[in-house]
Image (cartoon, rainbow, N blue to C red; front, top):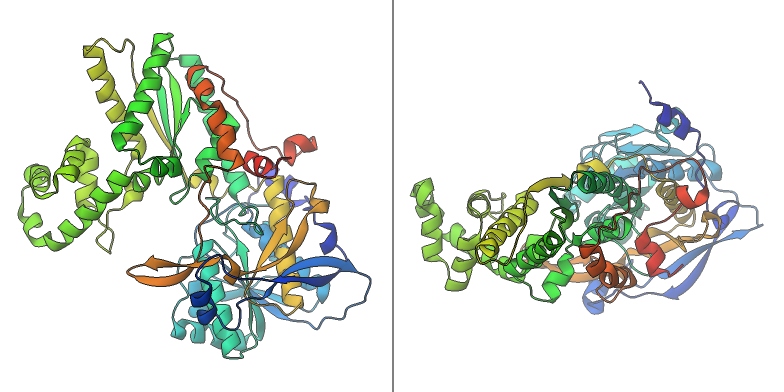
Length: 548
């Protein structure tokens, strides 16, 4: 395998660990826990794993003698930088406890467990992947572990390989599945522990005990570098407005973090749009106003950051999509007979007046997208909507109207970008390399202490790594009941951007100035070697949340 100069140099990097994980580790039990909401329902569903105490690891001088044990690991869901270091941390952790312990990786996600598709991860394999991005060591997949036959099928291979513990590295849904699996194996007394690790670049898996999900740091730094480059270009050519859509369907953490790093002229936060009941026209008018105000100063250029999930947060659009879903499901046969050129008029005639007006205002391409491309459940595929083009087109229309009315003098030309996959498999920043390695190491300590149904937790992350606090948090503590596909299910509560939180407040305090002044910041590429303030800096979000 040909390696780049950076890969060769990074292979030698030894991730930093919290002090408590360096020697022999003792698990100190804290207070008993309860779920964030719906306590009675969650307790009933998880009688064996509910209410367990928080765990904090401390160093001890007591000599410990751990038997060799076999551990399985699964990468679940979308990629996030640092996954390989979680696996390295688990491997080093179990080998330190007993050199005869073995680590097995299940191939292509949870499906590998069900289909008995696995490989042993030996030292030479692990060493190839230390401090690298991606999930390619064993691949990832999106199979959901929800059914009893899947649990039983998985147990067959765990029993065959004598695997006593399974670590599932994933986001909120994957960790919900880990908790369900832990409960099932505990109820059956199968003697298999299940531990989760918090992964998602979207940053929406966090709470008091999980300060950040891994990969968020690296992905935001990767996007911010490219946005910074675009802003430098934008300020050089001075003739384009750049509409930049960023990953993050359920929450706007990525857009907010990137805004704090690069200081764009505008950044839309979905959670604010929903809270203020803003319409699509409100958003378009706000952008057009900034474009017009900058044009009045002779600046016909700028940048707008847009979260991927915006359309689903606009209350009026949400209502339109819901009515469209119901209408098209009920009238699929009749709709399919109508000529393409007449479909738009047909839909406008059939919708309620409010939704018909919104539908009629949409650009042709987007209207088509909403009425034609459905997912297998018959729903609009919102992630396919090119929100950046939708907004720029509607802003252009509004500005043309204002020009006729004499309210706007200027030129408006747009460029479009979507940054998503570019950030998911980047080589992890020092922060993510250290954080992920610590999460994996803490997972091995949870296993050694006989825990199940816990998520690996590393806190105090704005301090130097030596002072990080490692431990475990019961997954049931993060759960609530939500409606999924028509029925109530226990799921980990997603963390959305808090409008009263320090990161959003810091952004809100600056945004009017950023809109008018060209005060761009150019973060440049992730630095792996050099002064610690450049190489090990955590996200602005973490710094503001912890006020350090």
